[in-house]
Image 1 (cartoon, one colour):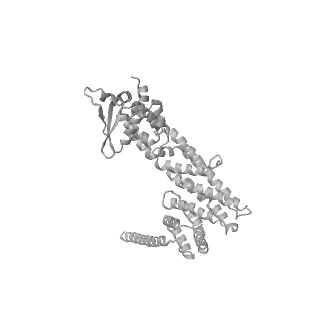
Image 2 (image 1 turned 60 degrees about the vertical axis):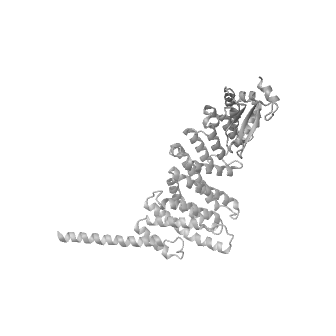
Image 3 (image 1 turned 90 degrees about the vertical axis):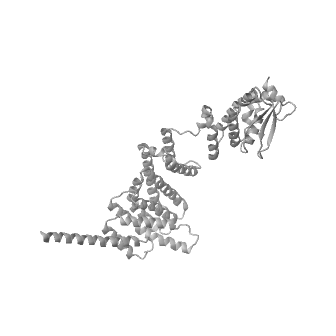
Length: 431
């Protein structure tokens, strides 16, 4: 019998021409009968062909389904009556195609299985749909290869190439950002952080000398750009204009972003050394009289970036020689101590003044400074604490904890010294 002709002349549910019934249970658990045609079912499904070929086969075939896949079986029966080349066009969503695929696998409908596979391979999915697809294709074997090709792990070389390209774009190395570049740059930065934080292959890639070299070049370029832009501020005739500040703020934001990824690549030390190297010249410009009453956003962002450096050094994530730690602290502590009350005063005068040091920022900087002080030689600690107690601004940063620890350590050190001298004297007398 010509199945194509039968499909054209017969309709699912037509009692007059039906010679077989498919029985499904609906969502309420009640059975429903679908008047079908054995010629179509046998030709399109090995399951139906096997059931009909049984010696004492019934004209009613029961399929056990649940409330979750009932609609999928109903849709599958409808698709059995369509020409093979029309099945693909009738699939309307990923969720529906996944459900139909599962029922097609269960009753061995190869044409519908192939159409669902082709559909799922071509259309976009979201994360939840991807999980459904992975469960559905688990039984497909080689037929699932086109679908799985989209999500299979890539080799280390390809991953590194993508990562390097993303890092270069995120740091704007070697080219200006095109139109809509800011959005793309932000996206690149987010994905670089994601790959470093989540991708299991990334630690191997970040240890690669080529990747580190690319990041070091980018860091050097960004820091040089920052120095040049900052120096050019003193040459600006109109410092009230937002253009100059916006440009340098963007560069500082890039530097701040790099502070998030550099520790994951064991490169934070490179930035800390560079920041310590340029700190004196940076403050020399930012404290110039010409900038005294402008660019508050730049000054706050500068504090935020410096806070990252102080945290890295203060908590021992980056190891610097004691003289470098002393110099870093003595360079930035006076400025931080000076700028905080100025910003607070402007905030009190204007409640809408946006450039304030947040409580979280203040706490993180204060904690880092205390930790950093306590890591210094005792005499350097004494110099910094004495200078702190001479100033009028004792509230921020509050170095009380460092002072108390210094007092305790100093007294303990003196006690150990006296005990050591006594033991030496006693030893001399006994001789």
